[in-house]
Image (tube, rainbow, N blue to C red; front, side):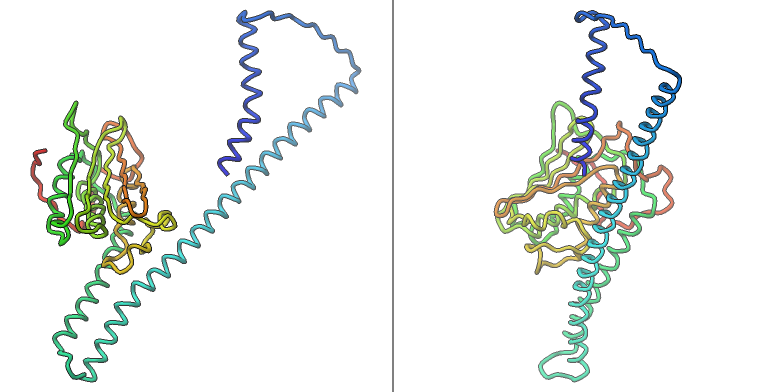
Length: 337
């Protein structure tokens, strides 16, 4: 659709621009500009006929343009509705899958308990049930967080990204895979430090923590993880890169959807909402998040956030009436790079 609009713009706009440029050039002495005198003589009926033809042509072009724009709007709306319907069906299938497994385990454990199966201790059964209930509770809590993130106000204060990334790396050291990975934080020291971004510090910390947590979870022992940050003039860019197994190309368009699990993510613990939360948080801060990956080589998640001196459209406010319940509590201290 965008390519079609671009083609029509070029076909219609180029002759007009060329004619406009030629007229300006001739009028400013860039070449000979002869004057032509045209004398047109016609009776009143002919003039009325010509005027009616011009008016009819203008009306015809206007009606054609209106119906063309209406048709394009309908096409865009139909495509959006189709994509929303497909996304909704995928979400329902994934939600059904996420609920089915723990419920099946709970049902089986309750059956063992009611039948008093030999060799199975009630304490073990109750422990397994509590684990599945906790899994369901986390799923419900994360779904609620996504809804609240879209509806509630968020804090809007200057955030030191470099210090925040230090705290995120420190908080991730409790991850069971941390010691088996090579984690590097790369921050600019010259010619100036990273500028601040406007937003909610806890939410941004949660987004970066989820990206680093994913890298620690899906990489292999001995793999390298790099958290890189730099400024490109208008934005602060944070990259979380790893040398893990990568993400299949077919999965890349959907990994930010709620509860979606790619082929390489199946069998790992998690709610399937971490990347959806990342996307929602970054979007609320006027930024964007992208991913690129190669199977067998690794993955790079790139988060771009507008620096504090650049205005951006977002729904964050100075006066906060509702605080977002962050999953992690980062230590507030200065980080020496």
